[in-house]
Image 1 (cartoon, rainbow, N blue to C red):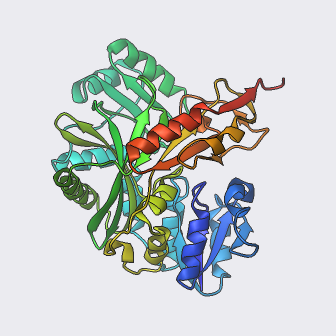
Image 2 (cartoon, helix red, strand yellow):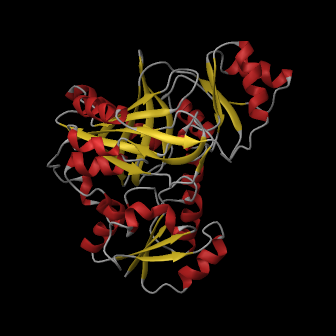
Image 3 (spheres, one colour):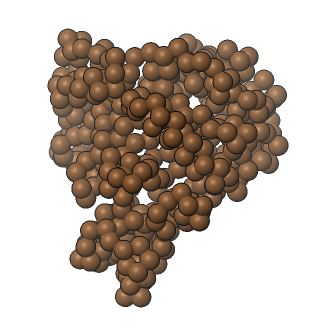
Length: 408
């Protein structure tokens, strides 16, 4: 009995394999590059899962392989890049899954914003920004106003996001955006000020359980580079219950009836405002943090959902565990990644800090303004998310991500 994983997030594959084993399923990973999962694969016993190297962008080749897969029972596609391909393949093979149209809609940030506005769940509409011409500029100013955020409707990892605080920045950002290869379309939405969080949720049959909230500490304006995350944020009980009701309404409004979601939001002076809805479990070490802080392997819910079963995580009491935090490790300068200095110091620091590598020595790091630029993640834990953050930052401060100039 096989559950296929069409690519995966960088971390979490080990938890997914253990979840499949416990549920009596065999995991098959389809990937363009097994080296991308080296950290996870090196820590699994030999033969723990099946790995097939295949061009996962070639949907027809993947479909041919699925045709030959014995006892195929489910398909998981947990990355932004392969979400839609995975949904279409699940639909083609009559496997359990969300309506591909719902996922296609969810991946369109402008469409989601306007649907939420129609439902009274956000104060701001989205406006398409067709180009830098005067007509498009004036329409954007009229419909959205300033400050605003320009971004890609299908963007990921804080790429192609511009904060626009005045008309001069608007003109410059429109010119910059016109030169970038977007995955979707350029649009604008209001800029909501306040701390950024992400809600980690599980939905089944149209009802949502809030598993907890992660903090999202960002770089200074005008960049939106993600830097530090901690889980779970301690909200007053009534506030957390209100957030859960709001998230239930948000996901229902866009037709998101099943599976994990990673909902980024800003907690403004006037209440929460959605930044974006990601139809998957959180990336980086969010999944790892959920497993440790909640005291359960949340990836069992991912397998159960892929099989069309109500995840037990929807109802089970959570035993809990340590709060967690992690810091993304960026180099000071772009260039060829040569290693990390200071890893030997982690053993002497509190919080059981650990380095989770993302890049391999020899990789070129070009972009430091968004999440393409980090080489690894520093993880730590403590009794509260606040203390875990302090420990993770202290550990990250002991390290230096090293690069040398390309060709040097």
